[in-house]
Image (cartoon, rainbow, N blue to C red):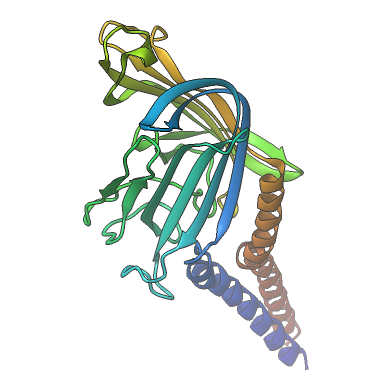
Length: 331
């Protein structure tokens, strides 16, 4: 009888450890992937903002106008391109489409709008190539519609774009910043909580950077000439609160400043065309917290449960060894 009990305990121990290994090292990599068709929306808002607005006037093309003390809303919707060649049901790559529009709360005027598509690694969440359908398209806000296709063998938006990896670590990650059109450092800034949910805080800081050249009406930059060539300088301070198990963005705050400078102007001496802070509103943060808690519970079955199985299996194996030794001594 003792031998039967010993064999049962030994079998249960081996089974528990094997199941834990299977869940953690086979099921987790297979199931912990970002979805092919997320269908998520986010709304960020800000007040007291200075911004450049292109105004339509009867009988003339749109004209740039600087407005101050604005209340702005940025709306973003993310969906999946299920027809993209890189997408397959169990594949490790997906293709997401992001549509963003910033509007003036007062009259609904669109300040900027864009659509972009990119391919992502479904576990790390980083942009990958090849990506057949990647592109960036800016809406007709400045009097023109610009579509910039990507190069198939090169990621058009390198780095992280929508979220952090599963099992986010306390380190620096590459984050793609649309303002400078390249990846920048997202540095770990400490532990925090959002509505009781433990999160990691990351910060991105881009100093004033020359990002574009353009011709603008002289009146816009206080010059007598009809047209003046200027350079657009951009800077940003961005804080992201990330749930580490899922890598989901829970809360985001971004302060941006854009300045037009003529060749003879130094930093701070040009014409400010955007200066303000946008932050995800309460409704969006609430939805992000609920989604993160649900997904975190599901992932626990693949990360937390294996640890319990390993500990329990180890105890059972130790008990089986003790029973074997006791049986031998009595024999």
